[in-house]
Length: 301
Image (tube, rainbow, N blue to C red; front, side):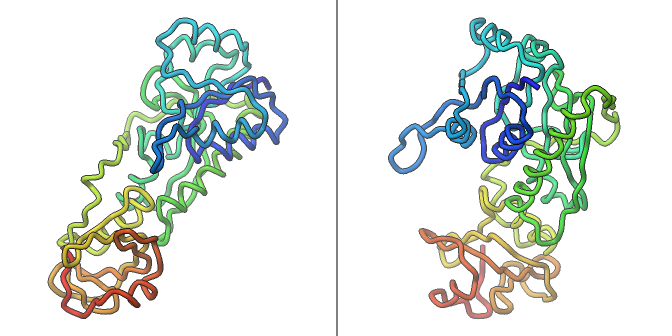
């Protein structure tokens, strides 16, 4: 099929690769414009932009579609379908209607649960047992369109947003190829009116750990906010980020160290397995403890 691909971050790259490998014609790739990044604040292209150029594909990155010429240029591609995954812009109705088969979106949740910006983070933070990807026919509402195909996966006690992100990205690549192959026979299923939840964007203010929460909640926060923005607490004034943890037995005053990098919570305790000191990389705690004194009774705040 003749496909317009619309995506921006790392999550979208395996989908683009899968479409190319499946033999679809990529008429054009749309992504967010390059933006300042890194210490030098030089303009950096998105992951999709870089991959598309490596593949020799044409790239466009309009700021928005308020300019009629951008809408006309999109329509002039005369695509069979547009595939949208983490693009970062709301598409006007004129774009949704332009391709022959409309626009298909890959969303990283089991709709109607976790519509919105941060479905992977929210699924872990809320302790969901399952998540997945949906291929959805796009319409004007926020992730409200009928679902053509869905795939599920369990969320393990060791999953972080990073590991789940990568798994769902690969699942999305498989799902969109299956959806395009079956486009003539798949029947769009309207989303249920019950069970709708919204995955609001992650705010950095959420990242500080409240040790009075249960160990289960603290563990979910650590895993759900890895790698970004990173759950953190302070020890003797130093901010320490936590990247991996597990719930364990133990009791004590909330925030108190009760064993080798084991910290008491409101109920239960968490054992930290990967952490990051200020100005350093994330590393296993046995490496961190070579340079960090953490006797029992130390207090995280």
